[in-house]
Image (cartoon, rainbow, N blue to C red; front, side, top):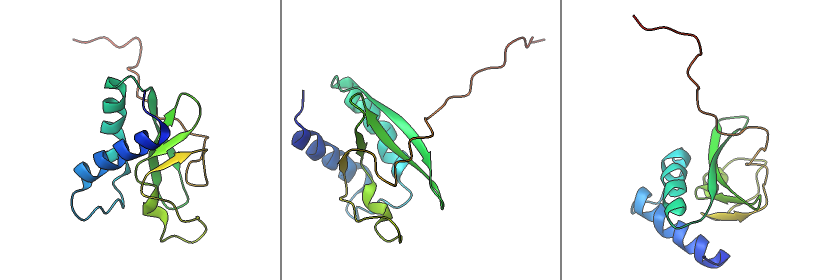
Length: 116
């Protein structure tokens, strides 16, 4: 199991691999968080992709089993008023950019449909 410091470092390296040299995380939360969820799962770290609705956009991050947030693109909101400055990868309790009222849902097939 990784320590918190190792988890943040691992996530930061993964983020750099996805975002490249510019490391611009704006509008890249799903592109980073979704594959990171799968990679962490392979390492035995349970994390779930969560989608939250903010006033100006939706945002994706990972929720760990212990309730903490692992947000590999938290810094993308640093330019917006009303949000406190965040590091590139945030690990900790939910903040204003992590509304807890929405979970990532998958569409389920409708029941009772027949195919010709």
